[in-house]
Each structure stands twice: as structure tokens, then as C-alpha cells.
Image (tube, rainbow, N blue to C red; front, top):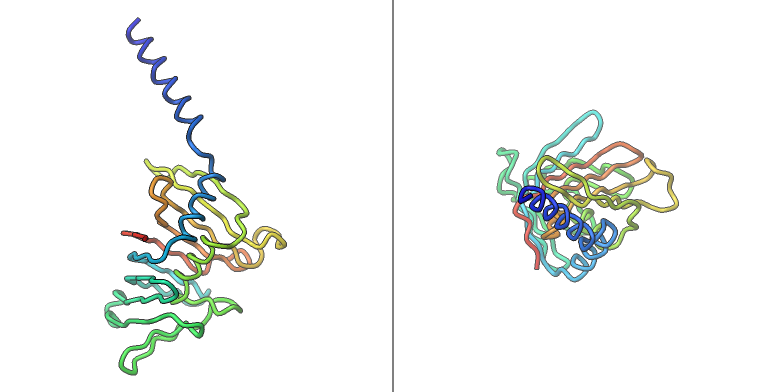
Length: 193
């Protein structure tokens, strides 16, 4: 009898939790509200940029404060310490005359340097085409797919964002152009204010 009562208690708790837990769309709207109000954030960002014939991997320390984004390259080690301030021309990392040019990944100037600002812009204002809760290992993440509602799926630019549903921290982002993933970002230590 005690075991049956305990089992019924767990079932009731699961039903109550499910009933009062926001669904994916509600969570996505709450995340958007937090990101619209966010004035600053910081994270370590692992970026993979796939140009088709060439693939580049970077590790950056990122700090966003208002309109300014400061990125400090940590890897590749050969270029560690290069710091970039994002501007509208973005796509070049410079330090004492040294430049690391990777070029744009699409016709809008998307580059590894502009990847984090592009992800944050999508979180704040792009059309949310899909919102789902995904189980990954032993955790659950909110996945939001941002895309132009006029474009058929798999065409144009699509941005997939994964958030911690409890803290709203951005943990992963991918940008695809015409169905081909050109940017993949893994974020750790994400803080916002």
C-alpha cells in the first residue's frame, strides 16, 4: 500500500509539474523578452565556420555591452590575443597590423566574427518558425528556429538557437544558408545583465 501511495504521489507531482510548466512557445516568448531587455552579456564561444572547401575553428571570449561587441581570440593559438570590436564592416580580426580574413559566408556578410551578434539578433527579433523542447543527454533545452516566414524550410538563412529553459542562457546556435550549416557555435559561461 505504501509503495502504491508513493507511486501515485510521483504521478500526481508529474501531472502538476507538466500542467504548470510553460510550453515551448511560452518559454520562447519569455526568452525573447529577456534578450530584448538585456544590456550586456559575456561567454566563451567555440565557433566552427564551414566554407565548403575550408573549415575554420575558433575559440573566442565575447563581451557585448550595448551596441559594442568585443571578441578576443583564444584559439587558434597562433593568433591568440587578437581583439576585435564589431563594426558594420565586420569580418576581419586585427591587431598591430596582423589581419585574419576569412571572408563572408553569405551575401549579407555573415562571418565568424559576426556570428555571435547574428545569434543575439535572431534571439531578439527574428521570426520564430519553430519552438520545441529537446532532450539532450540528461538535460532538456529550448530550441528556437528563426527563419523568414516567406521562405520555404531549408531556404534562405535559418538560425537555430538552444537555450537553457531554466536560466535562459544561450548554449548553442547554428546558422544555415539554403539548408547548409555554415556556422555552429557552442557557448559556455553565458552571463547576461
